[in-house]
Length: 68
Image (tube, rainbow, N blue to C red):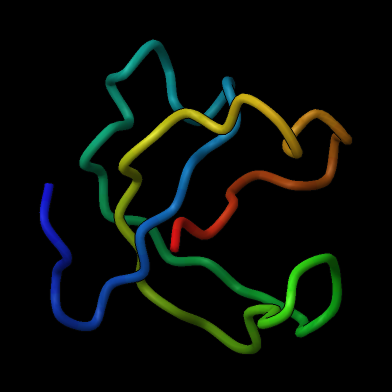
């Protein structure tokens, strides 16, 4: 899936990816602007699930990770 205007591409954790059923699903995410990475998400954004998050989503808190 190519980049969609106005949508952030994210990888979802296993419970939200749902054996690939969640791939391509549009979701609304909210970020507090804290966490790892150089550009943490702040505010509410629309995103599209494009991948399964294999690492970094196993902490019980992280549900999606931005894909760059």
